[in-house]
Image (tube, rainbow, N blue to C red; front, side, top):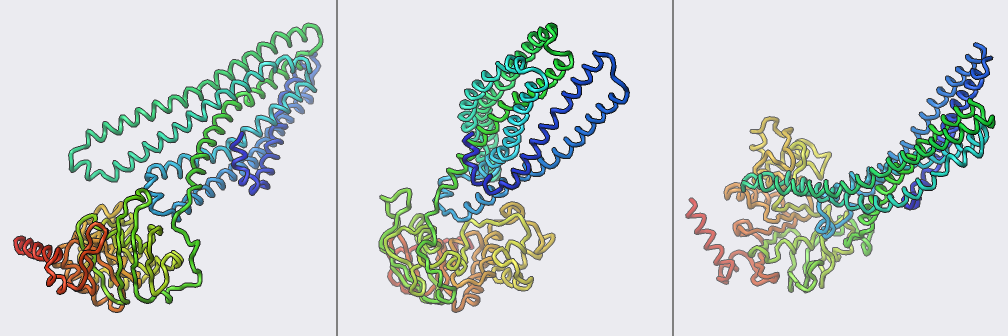
Length: 584
């Protein structure tokens, strides 16, 4: 029953709804006592042989009235209790989604997408069952069970009631024992479902890679193996769950047996009438549900408890990137200035003993362009991640117009940055809506203008529905270059103070690259731009170029200065020039 205590915050909040629901549920259980009593009266009058048509019609009418009352009462308790369950589901889903929105990158490194989806779907549904079917089963079984026992004692005989219900404690003990096993088994089952969900998501998302490498059979075999493991784990749940019904059947069978033997003796000895025995047997029929409800209830509660623990564990995780020390008075106008990096060292949270940046010191004046170049793993993307506040724990500071970015509210800082990564994410909607993602109220002219600046407009016009063309999941219908240019158009439409291109031109040809860069220089006049790239032609016009190696700056200057220094930059420039000539 601990899950009801865990959900106490919700039941307290929705107490009016549940009080109304429980009241109508109690009335339903009480009215359910009427038909067995009427059947007993009819049996006694038939046995005595002096029932009139008027009496018979009156009893039939009473049953009809009881049925109508049951119809109305059931409608109202269902509306309130199931409505409460739906409200709990809404609140939990909303809470989880908001939690996902505020969590930082380290959270998503620890949790796979499939796991998070399982928490937001399967676990939430199991918790919802507690507030719906769980409350119904608990209250209905208690009220019906207690009221039926009282009716047995009042209308039939207290001795027969006590003797007939002697097996009930064994049912409660057995349900408690099975419930403990069920909780552990269901916890394992939910974890297995998360793993299977994640495997499915990864395989579907990576279908192109799987087919390209001819790994379809191998991936199918791996999936089948995981399905078998999941089924094996679920069999434990089914095993413990399946034991509830037979246990209830045995107890009910014993109750009927005792009633027939002992009740028959009481009728023979004239202690009970035939009608009372008929009523008692009918009342036992009412007790069938409360007896079976114990097993059903334990199943719901243990599933819900295991799921709630999993969701709460997720919600208890706190983001490392917060506005705890932010100056809420800062606005976008306060940030219009120079960008300054003074990073002595930085290491990723999961490997604090291995610094990945050392002595990163530079100043980028407002309106200037910065180029970041170097080998893979040299630290280019890490420098950008710190600006985006994906990590806050580093020795040093990054300032924007003199303000440490860790004191700038996240919603203010990030609105001033447009970020275009190498691996772009597009939504399953139209090209127009993808470009206008951060500016939902953007005019059609502004969207077309952004597409022209990213050299995408002509490509869009060749598509079946132009800007209304659906791109498919993550832009599956587009080429890599089209995805990158669409992401650049999305960033340009935002008109942010700082534009960050993280190897965002890697999938376009040299001609398209030059066209985009030329458009950017014109569009970004007076605004700050950061370009991380392997292609040096992308940064040859930058105001400052930093050459990185092993997380440190080994060369810095303008294009001409770096060529004159005849270091790594000059060597890579000559090599790329040669590759371009050979390609031509």
